[in-house]
Length: 288
Image (cartoon, rainbow, N blue to C red; front, side):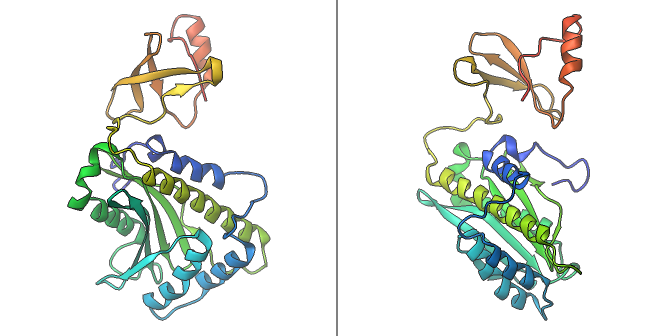
């Protein structure tokens, strides 16, 4: 989960598209299009509730959790822990199993309680999915879940999966939902976009778990296995990961050609093609 600095895993978006859906909705530049439940009125109520000062964790949870239920459109099952932190879960059925779509960890203010809500949400994720009742799902699922960490008027969203170990990746920074000196409609629009993105991601996970095929053994490689569209589409199958610390994979195209698949946040396509034309780099088939 990035603590310490070398304690990192693969991007969670390579193993379930719900996290990419969240990012796509969050980063759209057009005006936000509220979901039926993510209205300006509901979000304004939530922002006011986030900004309020509460005497204890339970009071904050009792006020904010119902508003989040209304906005996300899903019930949140809330339990108070021994350290007075509030832990909530959004679940659905996956055959005979219970699947965790999202886990909410709340602290009354920054610095209260024995752990920060981000780390605590990750530990709660591990606790829930590591239960023996979920062992039959291991060959068929990477257990994707959203994590929602709240500390006073701050909120953060993370994604989590399970490969050979549990991996947690922050999908946002801590975002301020408290008051401002001026009425700023951009703040409300940003909050609407955040919760619309979260609702879209959770809904995608719900569809995934409810339709999970418990006969199809899941690959240990990323779910992305093609590029191009229609007649130009090319598919590949992964053969191996070249380095444990790098997102480089040996793969084979449908026509038998051997290729390297690389995942990166940015890539200098022009530089690669220039080197390839001079014989100093392999042919670049596709960049997206």
